[in-house]
Image 1 (spheres, rainbow over the protein chains, first blue to last red):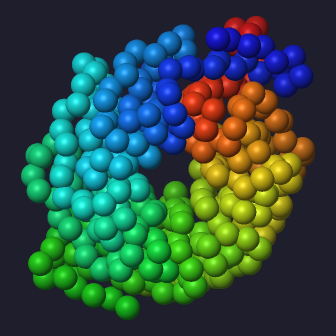
Image 2 (cartoon, each protein chain N blue to C red; image 1 turned 135 degrees about the vertical axis):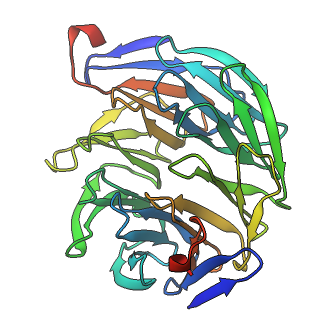
Length: 181
Length: 181
């Protein structure tokens, strides 16, 4: 549906398709795709130009957050599935299920160069993944309660996390060098 | 505190100062500042190089999310104060309290050019602010329940929002032109 609001002079399109709360939205870096994650256990892809849904994909549990990789080739989703799910927006299909968390996964972030993916969860874990190699993650131990917030520094060298244990933690996640230790 | 984990070869700094859950973290675009928002009703600024807190500022209510403007000159925070609070990281101090929401504010995002700020709240409102002019916001009406998610398109022309009413809404928020209507 497309509406024109004369009061605000704004066009709005109503994208209908999810069957429960929409918890996260993200545009692809080129702006040609919109992704959404919902409590209806799906990830949906939309064409922002037409407002049409282009795919509805089964995420098997509530989706809290979605994030595109910097090159736009991967969408990561997290939520109640206890996993990080990686989706190929082009096919579109699920390409990987990253296992390791033992609780809800609350947040996800790609490093600016796209070579690392960080996830944080109710299991107090911060996990660091290589989104291409499909290897087991590095587990960054220390938080003593659910972790809610995650952000990479602009240069990708640091990861900041925060949560219920009242601390912010700064992890050195760049390449190992003498300077970094 | 600074720790070295031989298992993961990661350095971690534990940033202690908040007195309750840390809900949001963000790095400034130049990477020289880290901001956090907490249920202890404060926004804190940290030096990511030293791990030292540089300011603890009273936000008057639980802070859910923090976001830096693209030029790094403004930090926006939202939460249970029913407002969008703008902070000057340099002073550091509160520079503006943007009023209009009549419920918890769940999300905040700057447009890529920094000229617009969008906030979404439990009052079903999507509000669009000029972070410099301090003018009343444009209210984007339509959602019929709490709004949880918000993202600008990379070109700043569209705003995507989503929430409890199960819809994603795409708002045309770029400059008014014949092409956009």
